[in-house]
Length: 435
Image (cartoon, rainbow, N blue to C red; front, top):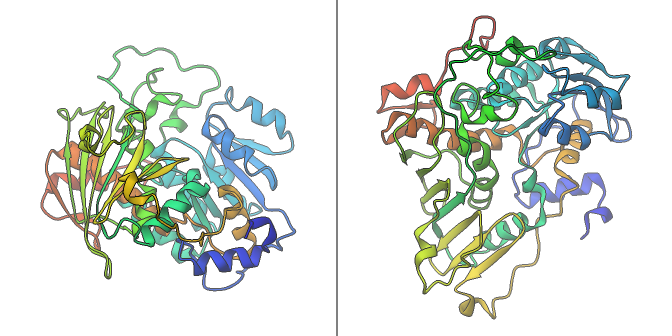
């Protein structure tokens, strides 16, 4: 049924029953919930770049506060919303008790401080991917969201598109049989370099100390921002942290994957400052109920699974980034907007399952509607936290150079002591996370 023919209530009920990852707060509405016809009062933390995209997608609500550490880049948003109070320190915005919800679109290293402060102040949160900068932060954010019973959503917007839903339905219908192997790859590269030695002046309007936030102090340099921070360990997590939450989301959703039990990386010698141009990570996931264990392999920087070299499979060489599910009865190749069953000749007469996962009302709107009704979202922090932990463990394996054994229950690596400071990092004075 087209979603515009469903009521909001029936949409969330149907989605929950379809098992698409919705989390319901345990009550139809919570203290302070608004009528679906009322508007939320929202604060936006980070209003340029990806933050501008997020802002554009929540303008159906009241934008009452804006925050950005770069006053120059924030100018466009301030002109559009002249009545919204502007801040350069997100802590000041979160202190307000008249804001219902916040959008966090900052660099990775400030996701957790902003998100945790907002959750603890009773605000609902939409946070960009990856959910956090470290594995432990992801666990803490997920636990805090559950304890505070706030409505949450991570910014993996492609999760809301119809193609992902059709792939999930095919996998769950056993179209290719039980899946024991998955390959995920992207060609993108986010890399840093050796730390710059020059110390140019901080541009006018940039509050650099606030931009650093919990990261160790280092002099300003244009090699770090905007956007280029993704290649530096102190601020981001390279290509893996940037893109894996989008592409690994699909097998996590379709197969019900959570955190892995072992993680092993293969790539260049780890750099103390910056992320690698190429990387392969192998994740071992335990069985789930009657579903078998799954080995998931990630590749980036031009690397792809060996299946593309097998001429008998006839996989499209120009496919680009994607996901390959390998089942006992065949394979399913997918990307953002397309998917194909292989070998094609064996699936010519295959009858696809009827669609069972409703179309999304929009990734951001799922969140804003749930904030009003106490309903659920598809990429809540319980789901997104486990996905983020998985992604970031790949970087920990790369940086330690060892195969990790992960104790899921206690969020710790049991066999590599040097992994611990990468799981739980230190914070600059004044930015320590409090439990």
